[in-house]
Amino acid sequence: MIEKLEEIKNEAQKEISSCNDEVTLNNIKSKYLGKKSAFTEIMSNMSSLSQEEKREVGSKSNEVRTYLQELLENKLKEIKDTLLTKQLEKDKIDITLPSKKRRTGTLHPLTQVRQEIEDLFISMGYDVVDGPEIDTDANCFELLNLPASHPARDAQDSFYITEEMLLRPHTSAMQVRSMLANVEKKPFKLICPGKTYRRDDDDATHSHQFSQVEGLVVGENISLSDLKGTLELFAKKMFGKDREIRFRASYFPFTEPSYEVDVSCFGCNKKGCSMCKGTGWIEILGCGMVHPNVLENCGFDHTKYQGFAFGVGIERVTMLKYGINNLKLLYTNDYRFLKNFDRKEM
Ligand code: PHE
Image 1: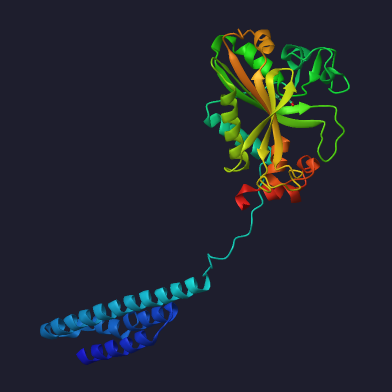
Image 2 (image 1 turned 135 degrees about the vertical axis):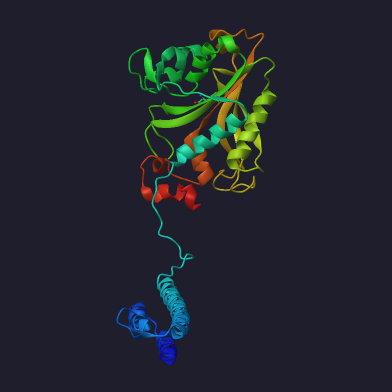
């Protein structure tokens, strides 16, 4: 019996080592250790043996069973491991391949530029306020020191809804609203971005609807140099750190003195090119010190308080910043144009 067990052990061992799939392995298991196996037969014939033989055969059979079970277990593990390795090899993916681009919406360039302007002024402690697009003649003109005879008040230039109400032709209407609202809590500094409307024929550089950002600071000891420093920062933030600005005397009824501000041309760095029409400078905004009449109209003692104001066209800044030569591109929502402003792809 002992030899028989040894034989079983050797044969099984051979078959196990040459097997390489789970089904065959299970067959081997039942062939050698199963109910109908020679091994089980030996076990059931044990009763006919003497005490001495029983001990010997018992111990041998235990040894053989444990040994074979261990072999089977190890083999099963080996088969499963090989299978897994093969599967992994087959399912391998190249994670360095570029992924399919997901098309997602992007912010409109005008919104991006507006937000950039807002971020700058917020960082300097300004409030960002919103105002109505339909406003009174008083807020748009009268209280801003625009005399009744001023050409801007002509119905030909603005969209009047009634005699007294119109689509605001500039965000300067918010100067009046803000000052009237802030009489109690001076000093203040704020910007107001928003839509504005004028009776212009639409072309490559004009639109009946456009957008501006108004800036207004009112307090004591506010001077022109504050305005200059602020606008210099603005120009550098929007057009690059090497930009310079220059003030040209101008006229707005609501500021005194009034200026138009030019930024040094970023196309040619002041040498003269087609963008700056050979002058080296590009006009970007209008500004000035708040006119004493306007301060008084809005409840501020002009001997005590001063202020500065500026108004900048968002379309103009956007066109200059990105070299856009036709205003219509900003309004027609052509995806081929807009996708150039996807910050995720930049
Ligand atoms: N409101 C003026 C315009 O639309 C710009 C401006 C704003 C000028 C504030 C001076 C001060 O052209």
